[in-house]
Image (cartoon, rainbow, N blue to C red):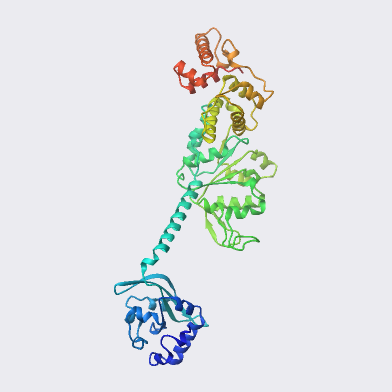
Length: 490
């Protein structure tokens, strides 16, 4: 079908407007792909720059109840289609891709597009009736709503994934050093000050960072963690600050958001900050000082509303002294220093830690929670734990996999950690005044001795099961752990 030879012919256009202009207009429409839509659509109409009807395909007049097409050629489109928005399209040059237009008692699904000449000027528009019954659009609308719901669900899942999981209650233990650390963390959470968490590998530095975030006013905002040691140096700048399209070879064509943008309003946790290269240290310092940054390949300044928490297993003060880390950045990061204690510095927390880790393993792997025998726990308390809590978790996970019994015994732990020098607590016939800090022959010593003997008897009667022993003694399991730790030999 050719628009110039179908529907109303050129002779029918005489008097509507200048014939040469109309011919040119239809030629533009005919040369475009829109003519193919006109062939398959229920209706098609072309208007000129003044929104006057200059052409209709053969189907449209029938749908509109027009018996003589010549009577509408040259008429303002609103006189033919009272609810048409074709005038808006030719005046603004903006298409209306999908709409529902009412005509009498019927509703049509329509699309409206502007027509341009070779210079890009709007010279008219074309309207297409895609469907003659709006109800036929129901599957498309349903699919659109489904896609929108899936998009919303994905965004919610992503937001949840970016939230911190741990709170201060996730720091298991009641030792003096951990209790003080929790108090410091609570006070720190009330401010926006930068925090530098230092500690050996495996002590739980990110856990502490998440706990601080969740105790702060930013808890409902994102928590974004970056392990600097795990990212190639060439990609670090784009990882932090983002990049515009084409900023570097292989860059995303749509650009990419950096971690500062993703953490907007929330907390950015920089793990292994000591591994940050010098060039990026200078740019991070500027963000901390000025609160602004530029995406890679852009000259537009972006504001950063982000709290910085950082962590390292290195001695940053020594790194500064050796010229390996910028002193000015160190002082900016170290406004509030927090030291995560090594496991060997809080061995009184070992029983509670083991209990919690074993419970977590049972939830993860299924089955009933396991327990450690008193001898096995005492053996673990005499190990140096260079890998700290992470190593403890690894040992317990292997013990659970290799043990068939409810209680993990000493020999099973010794097989995993051979060569540890220890004493077995229950083998001792008396408490240790030195460990308890009591003077011999004092009333306190006598009471402690009686208490210890009662605990020993309860554990022996219960086969080393601490939960049953605590119940037998009428105390909580936590109290039992604390008392056992008090009487442990030095």
